[in-house]
Length: 434
Image (cartoon, rainbow, N blue to C red; front, side, top):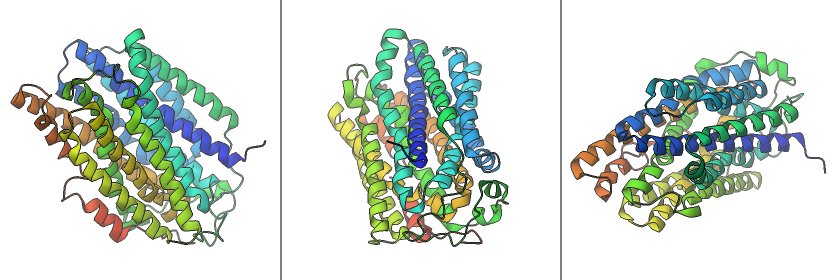
């Protein structure tokens, strides 16, 4: 059975995001084991873990620009090869701080090009009435990758040592690069105008990909658009919660609940598996509501975004109250699952407001999301170090409640993310010929 090219592209981008997040979770697990073995404190661990996000933040907008000018397919391949090579060559020694910082910065810069490139590719291939589930499937790869990483990599570290994680990640990256090089192609024309009878967004589009690549980027319109800023604020809020949980959940299980990741079995992957499921559920529900004309594009995005963030906020608040592995896994699963559901709102909206410049808008909004990782991951380490000094260890709920109170979703002041989304989020395309 011959698979349509756009489906193959979506499947390959899904695998792409899975491999990327296996790498991120893998470094957190491998470095935590190596650092704990030589007595590195929590603040220093937070600094190393957050270094990735500095490089990641710096390359978001350049990644969108490069994908727009050179083509998302080429940029995606080059970035994957760069971070895979870095992982293959990096020796994991917690005492060689400068080398670790430089390597994580380089990996961050390389991976920063990936998501703007993916959005550029998907905007070219995927018609409007398939966007929600296509983007949701692609981004759900992040959560499946994180789940697989949490399930398999602790065992690999136990039997082969922390360094083996990097070699496995490099092999996965090289394998995906070969698949992408062999099967990915550029479309002869953009798909943004396909399916307009189902979802009318563009009145006219450039018919040839070369014209799209050479089009002048409307920076002023992008940076002064309220819908774009609604996406930016929600991206920051989402990633603050995601990155803090992704980087510090292993520490919470190990030190907060006195549990061994190796002994937890498959339960430790449930939060990320839940994200995978809810992300795809959100995409299917969104496309159903839109194509059946039950809700407009704007109302669909706002509805799923709001429901996802509100439920996640409640789950985050009560996590420290549960002192068993089952309770902690359940609450973190609900929080991450409904955060993923919310991605059917803000995360697809890039293609609604700017189908030809989706990579650029993704780069702008993902810069904010990456800044959340820088602030959140590093700040969490400092908060835990202060809590450890005050409570003598990290096993008490009070030690972790200060971290939970820092989540933007839980703070009534930064609950403005939902307010801004509801007030300014829309599907109105600001391009001149929409």
